[in-house]
Length: 258
Figure: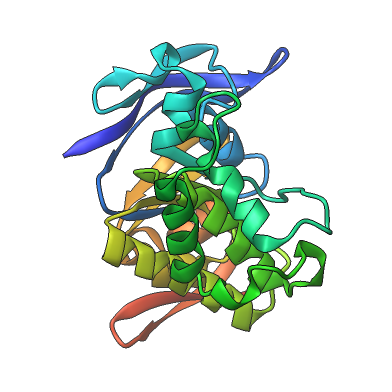
């Protein structure tokens, strides 16, 4: 069932149009990656889907309901958003950061409930941070810090998680750590994940679906094997590549810039 969709979506900044009449649907419980060169509209698409940016035309729907008609709290209870470079004071403990994820479920000035505490604990356990609860954010490694932000988003108990380049600035070990966590959450919790990715190898490894964008439009949409061909990679990125088949999953090996 397509429960999260964009219909005829256009958006931009000032007079600059970035997205051009995009229509997409995402099925519940799947992982999809949005790929494309810089400036193709990937992050803008994610911002519109999370209602961080108002489209100039078209609409985003959740379970058939326009998100423009939903309250901020209702959006936050259904859609978790992790921007490319989230910021928080470095001296905040992990458990306090994760607890912020409960705000959409709380009334103004209301105290933490048993359900809130249990949810925060679950989010830290799900992300492997239960032993880091009192560690300050600035003392964490890059991978741990990214897991803390994911835990905060999980504490919202969303149906959908939108992530803008979740592996940015991470070494290869922590990249796999974060993506394997998202894969586990998708499997164990049925969480729908839509993420912007630059690394095509990682996108093909961890996503059942790739949406390729160029010049503000969707140019390809399908499984990694169908999207990541040498011809397609050249058309989209202007990069010569060679495709190798590793255990049945295709990966792009870059051979140089044309």
